[in-house]
Image (cartoon, rainbow, N blue to C red; front, side, top):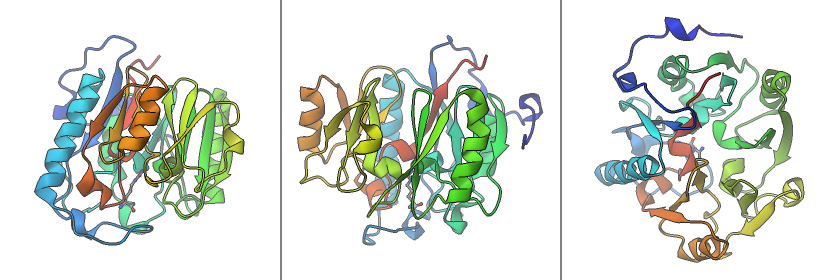
Length: 281
Ligand code: CIR
């Protein structure tokens, strides 16, 4: 379903600077909510985050995205929605179309509307309808292949709807079971054109056999979530030095960012942004 045409979207302060060269990635981010401590948690114990520190760390993360060449669209905090900083989960943006998800956690289903208003300026929008659920954190796109984690947050119906939206554009969509982790991208992320960073305890290697795989250091179980925006290096949490060394040994430049307070909310690098190509046509 198409929600609205881009020209109908409300004007937003975030869009004042809209001149970009075709290859420039755009990153949507949202300030950390004051209520972050009330976030959803599934696979980590609750340790209340320091919101002021989380905001400082988020600012450093935004700076890292800018240093990788991203044009930033910065949305204001949504303090009534503890998890709203994790914008990745509410939309899946491809070059041709964006799919607004229906997050698996019911508490997160109002987070998408302001992101949709922003995205509508850049892409035609589709939606995931009930009973489908889908979190963007479960969607790993590598070229024209789309791997979707099938576990707590994304169900069979949601994955089937995503496939129906994307296959007409030439994408193949493949469900991938995960274990003991929140999202597929907790377990595997892209770190270069042909390279994935993987936590093999949480996802099988087999679906990713066509790519060069770098395994995380086993002592750093949450280290598989890195953010590559298609330019330069990757953003990676600073508290995983052994995995960082593995990435660097493989020739991948790492921008290490301290995300300790967002990690307490079960977030990391990919979840705090939606990155997409700036050219629509
Ligand atoms: C949640 O459980 O939904 C949030 N506390 C964390 C979401 C992190 N999202 C992501 O990694 N894509």
